Image (cartoon, rainbow, N blue to C red; front, side, top):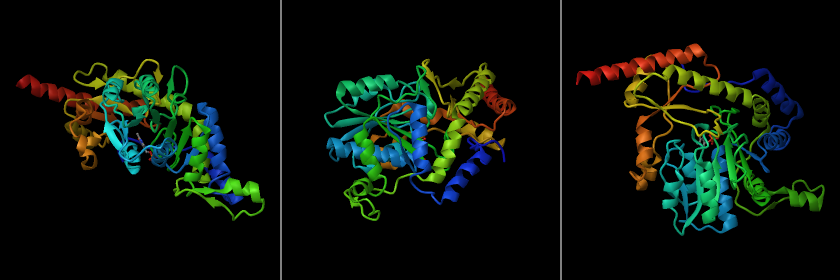
Length: 382
Ligand SMILES: *Cc1c(COP(=O)(O)O)cnc(C)c1O
């Protein structure tokens, strides 16, 4: 089977027991375990609100939609975002017919506050910040910018489950924080996500919009037994999470800290093995940041050649990410972010998951070193 980039690991017996409770009770949908998971997530992160959804993509879309509704944003208004991300970050903006304005990234592969500031116009409404690979990058700089220019801050924390900044879970300053519990993320379910709004009002609206705009509470309160009777005020979506996913999430959350500690150990082994390897560059993590270590990324001169070499040895790394302005959908901004483009051409994510051993890491690094030596040999001959 070789070594995959990601292989999720589940605490199977415990997950099955939690799922069994849902099946026995006959309650697999929203409510029951979804509420329990929301409470557990708030307790873990210290964030004020948490609403469980079927994906982070849904959460990012709802964040943009809800601020657009509450703040009266117009179509064509702008949100500044990063080109170095999974496309759902930017699709979420485009779904609401807002313009994705791409700013460039810094050495942490996250949005650079200087570049962001230079892209602010009278139509800028928000900044979408991605903590790439679990790093906080210059998140604090972004918080400052948002205060200075009265912008909303949306934190795409899809990679950040368990990341700490100055010893705490970051995100309390953001207007919305969105986590992914998709299978290959640090807290795997099968597919789900969580949105944490700073304000209660946004959370309340989100609960209606994630369930087709249905407002059950008002009628439950006013009319007692008329359970079938509810109000529909908004054209909402079917975005809420279910109890089966929440049951898995509750179990996996118990192991998140331990799992992330092992991820950091794997990263340390990579660092040690590659310390003397000339020609590669490690992506640094800010000092105050304890990364969830979702990814282990390197910059290499001949990325595609290295990918091929590793694939031949049944090692399957990844690339996070292709500069989004290279995609035809976002090509209007092509070439506008030279650093992101450079990284997009030179980044490689080495396998990082809980089933890897020190021996695996050594084996992978041997191949990387051999490739780099071969490159050097070619150079020496010309
Ligand atoms: C995975 C991911 C998402 C989307 O998460 P889903 O839960 O799969 O919708 C969004 N942003 C980033 C940076 C991601 O890696």
